[in-house]
Length: 64
Length: 64
DNA sequence: ACATTATGTCAATTATCTTTTACATATTGG
DNA sequence: CCAATATGTAAAAGATAATTGACATAATGT
Image 1 (cartoon, protein in one colour):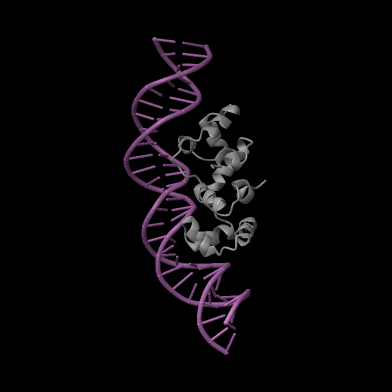
Image 2 (image 1 turned 60 degrees about the horizontal axis):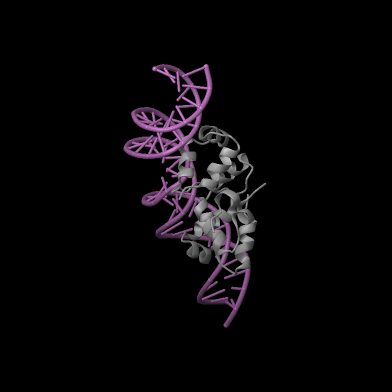
């Protein structure tokens, strides 16, 4: 399933997928794949994304 | 660096590394490596561990 | 209308997470 | 003292995260 919270948080910072990818040191396709879902990124990448977007892991990646 | 919060949370549930590994469907070495640190597990594994230990991502894996 | 940026997606390759097998030490209970 | 459990660690192989390059379609602004 899609990660719409990530997409929204990125939009709130007015960052493109490319800009976020550059900021956290991965490729644009990786960010796109995470937002698209059916993907399993590493915890360090998730943490880097959270810090760039001023969020926490629970806010962007926790699922009940 | 070591993940002592994970080690403590596991101890609080009285689970061995093997028991936690079985519960989340990975090998004992993987749990050991995560606790040992210098390791980068996937977010899905982190979530599975958190749910097994009744914690959240922020509680076990967030780092300021 | 045009150029530019942003996004979606795919195939092939590289990097790395995870397993398997194995051996070692420490600890606990009988 | 002995058997069983728990933990730490390592090398090789398997599974998958992530990169690279490419092509396509929307969206945006001039």
